[in-house]
Image 1 (cartoon, rainbow, N blue to C red):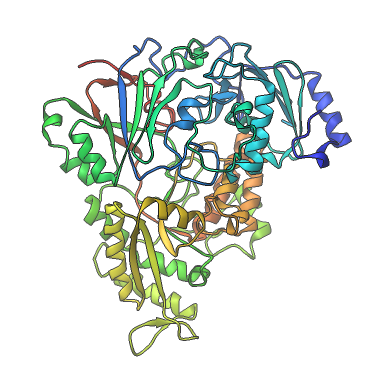
Image 2 (image 1 turned 45 degrees about the vertical axis):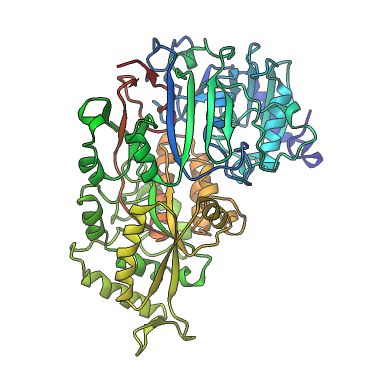
Length: 606
């Protein structure tokens, strides 16, 4: 047996071993796995439901990225990796079907085996699986990848690694992982771990940023790249997996290229000039008013609205609670009250998109704003009642203004909360604490975030009424990444897309380890035992009902924590694209998200 976490884990608990042995007596390898219930597709499926299995191969696709890159290693904290490396050139043991909430099907692995309690998982590799250099994908590559990512990779891989008691090679093409905790999601998480070629990294520091592209087994290989300018991928004609049912109708372009631009406006101008194949428009007002250029009117560019069924996620201005001025929930609520969403939304978007109500809004996983917790939600929250912020159990909803620019009612409420928290306005009109320190902070944005900058400027003016001085600071992409990775900011733009199958990644988003550990996605510095307990309840939930209750409870704690000033969201994606590009008639459950563009699109001359 090869241990997963060093010599200290060589021994598997006697009870756990017995449980695994008993379970293996009846468990059978499967072609796929679902978080709950059975995967929707049968073992003999011919293609995913949201693809065109007869899509032609050929053509090229060009996408615009804002910012730059300085690394080809997307699996570590250091550097800013080029887009496409992980998605296009590296594969996982299982592949995700984005027309289901969370189901995986065999990719590098031909089968998956686990027990009812999911105390272990065993994968059997396909004998034909090959890296792009022609070498076989081996069990040793799998074991090395899981351990290396868990110990030297980005923090997002570490949590699952710590839950592995042992891993062992159980056959020429099979590997088994045994777990030390109850966590139903772990077999799926390991199924989605990138598998890298062990031999490539011998004698090299995996944790360092590098311009050496990883050798993967995916449909594309990196053909060329220029630091911070472009990364171009060519479809591998010898790709081992091109005939798999899971891959049929996917990865149809001969070339996929990512070009880097200074900001979104530059990308839009390049799109108008025909240098970019497609553009995703986030601003409703611009969608209605800025798409009257010749290529649209001639039909060379098509506008499409792609619906989806995923949660709203959270987007807005995040407050870094590591900073003393944001530590008090009353201060954070006051700052939310001062943000006149209705006026800003009308000014920037014509008032069209709705406001994000909660982290899992727009889905069955979201809490009911303003309503008290009940049933299993309440049972989960009760043990933490004394430490929860107001509204978590009783019900919390974002404040609403009358749309007038003055926002008088909410400003008065904000002033009262600030005074209650120890902040008062002196004779000089400046808001100060008991030590005489003024309330001042910086809003950090990336150069080119024009829409967010416009919202911030309106907000800054509103804060002056309260005696607060906020300043807007725009920095380049590299500086922004460094500062946010090290939590060196007061307030900044924040976006976290959430799925219908939240699980262990939520620890990376909101776990207490992120308060001090750099590189996590917990930018606000959430440090809440209740949050971690709700996440634990989610991943241990034995059925969909308990999972939903735990997620709603988590949504309550996060939303009432008042960490983010939410802005707007859309229940559809607005895509403009070249008429030479096509996509399948069936839109997947997740819509225009991972797994859609460019994965299932193809080229067909107009």
